[in-house]
Length: 149
Image (cartoon, rainbow, N blue to C red):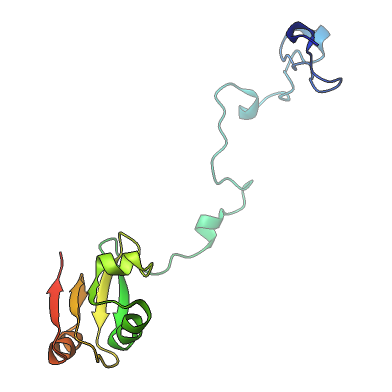
């Protein structure tokens, strides 16, 4: 077998359909586009959401609500959860780097600490946001808080 002997398997290739090349081709005249109308003419484009005259779905379904583009999403941790994380992962500083290293947040997440539960351990917090109640509880336990951003 040599390179010049290679050819596709039988039936693997088809002849190209040549439209508009005379009546003898069987595809001449209207070139399989029917007789008249915009669809038979050059430059025809079907509208993206056209449903054959039926009211399109984006107009049938009502719009609801409001999406605030300026909303900041936070990954939330409560004080009760933080004690469990300290025991499980041996965290001494509650910071974005430590949380990322332990697989608790993504690199781009913002972290907010909320005050539900009790904090027993003395920790240093370096987070994006913190509630007043959580800040008071942390400082009462002997920890310190640094808000990033």
